[in-house]
Length: 182
Image (cartoon, rainbow, N blue to C red; front, side, top):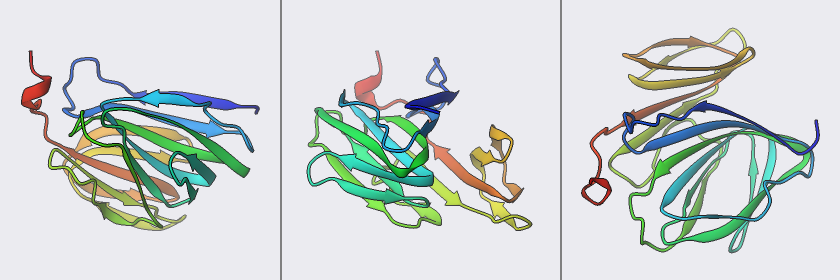
């Protein structure tokens, strides 16, 4: 593989998932990047599944497998993300911004397990990484499982998931904010 391989696993066009706009399963070759690009009025939650990633904006950040980065683009920013020597596998989850005219910000949650504080009331994220032969109970919500055979996305009421896998559960307020209506 050279460069970027991207597979969109979820992209509802009807707004039915509230703030959740898209989930992409990205694979970056060693030292490959997305290229400098702009974001505005979007929050990007990057879940690093494997490898490592360098975020290039402001002071930058080094991300490793198990980390979750939250980029709030607000009024706008330009950045890049570049894989380390080992390449990277990342689930990029795009949400409509909770503060579209706010100051841009970036924060990293290291070795995440359980609930991730996204700093917003309309979306919650729960993460687990069960190992081979391990089973984990997941909360109700939109389940995204990155397993050996691909990505599963389904709305569910809570259940058990067998590893090995990266498991995300999104709990979403499907009402649109006042500024997004119309």
